[in-house]
Length: 318
View (cartoon, rainbow, N blue to C red):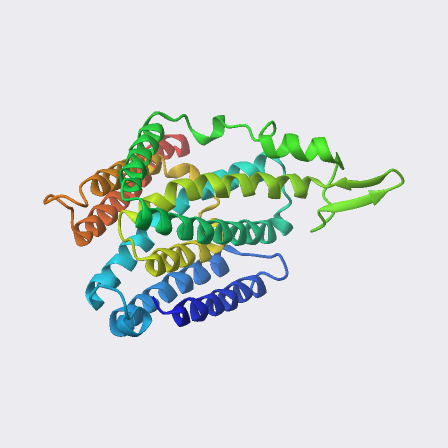
């Protein structure tokens, strides 16, 4: 893999993060604005996919992938990570509600969450790629983990039952600092006559950092089942996460309507786990088939969810 591709993409990522931060600099994000930017980030990912298709040998001269294989792997990985990232939105909404995060600072909190997720995933991608190179049996550990995660999603209660107020990050912050009663804008720490104390925003960031770790543990093994090419794994994750902030504000009022999303994600993770188990066998599942399974599963889940919630809401409105 050419180092230039990593350096160039790192610079592109910084530029995209700066652009995302600039367009929400005043803390006001309307649904219309968020929808436009969501489409922008999706379009940018698709443009990058076209670039991969035409210039893959220049981006990865040592890769065994053909242009078409690389483009298909990126698109499949991107859709997989995008689907899994929607689950993040449920947790973000729950965190904002439980800690009463003011709407004006939510865009900045989401940005910090996305940056933290990008850093963590970049580290885990590097570690995961090295482990797969050195220890082939790690492939089966990843597969077992995905199947277990899928099983947990099938059995897991709704996100509303989770309580982050007593989670480990909250306990650690309260052990190290006194905590102020109210938010102080974007400040993490404030000083009074007794010294420094943390604001509730500090606690929120700590909780989001914990969720970043948990989601990375799920998503990184999943995408390695699609492709072992580290550059494709990294770029798919970056593009999936970059549009997460805008997507949150688009779906904020609709998250409760996606009642079948978690079962759909459970099925996808289980399917990817099986795909990883079969990778080195004559029954290996082609990446194009995986792409179709992901698209069909998410589409069916969204349509079925909207139809069910519409039927439930219809009698109430009459």
